[in-house]
Amino acid sequence: MFYGKKKSLFWVFTSMSAIIVIPARFSSTRLPGKPLVLVKDKSLLYRVWSIAKAVHAVDQIYITTEDGRIADHAKQFGAKVIMTSATCNNGTERALAAVETLSDKPDIILNLQGDAVLTPPWVIQALLDEMLHQPSIMLGTIATQMKQQDYDSMCLSKLNGAIGGTTVVFDKKHNALYFSKNIIPFIRNRSEDSLPVYRHIGLYAYRYITLKQYVALAPTLLEQTEGLEQLRALENGIPIKVVVVDYQGRTPLAIDSDEDVIAAEKIINEEGELIAWN
Image (tube, rainbow, N blue to C red; front, side, top):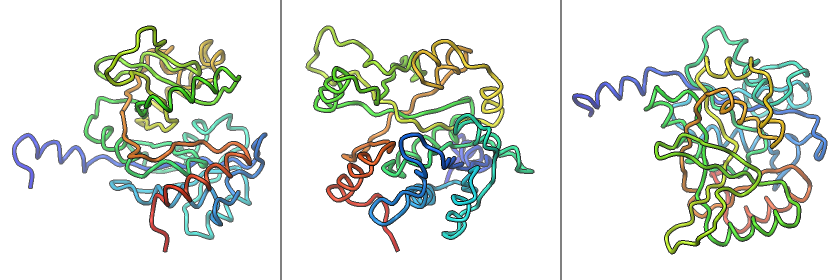
């Protein structure tokens, strides 16, 4: 039981409504029909939806898409589907378009991309819990501290011209200062302490009013230069809280190609499934 001040925090926690929106677009340049691609005999979309269902304190989970094939597939495994326009430029716009169809607007919208098959449910939970317990946070995201081996691997891939992998730096209150496709901060003097480099994971949670504000803003110079849409928020003075999470030995991976599918299956074979399948 909760008493005193903790009781009021419990009231705040339980009085807020939260949903997970999973944008799923059929047309992908590098991997057409990506949400329907199979990873170990289960579609990317089904895997992500199943991971979302393992998160607590969520009122509803919606898959939103512009394509009937994705909608039909989602309905086959019991998901709630919201059809949105093909004119949505990205998953963030699609998430807002889906929310706008709801008669009761949620307090918190967690935007979980439809290819995030290796995002552990406890990582999603950490972000949602932070938003529930801290009503002052308007926009939140997650990052994980890089180990030396991961850092060296990213440095090598960047030297070879890879653009994948984003890092973030934040202040003492964990408000983001900058995100970059380069590795930041630059390590001039190595310390025996832990490496102060954090890999950003593209998972976002918004207050409804913040999501509307963000989508209404025009793309910004740094956003277009780096190809990182979260910079639009920073350039317009919208703070982003960075929640540092522990992947507990799991390997993060974004799926954008057939090679990534093979890599994801290899990771699952080595590390096991994130959830139990019926």
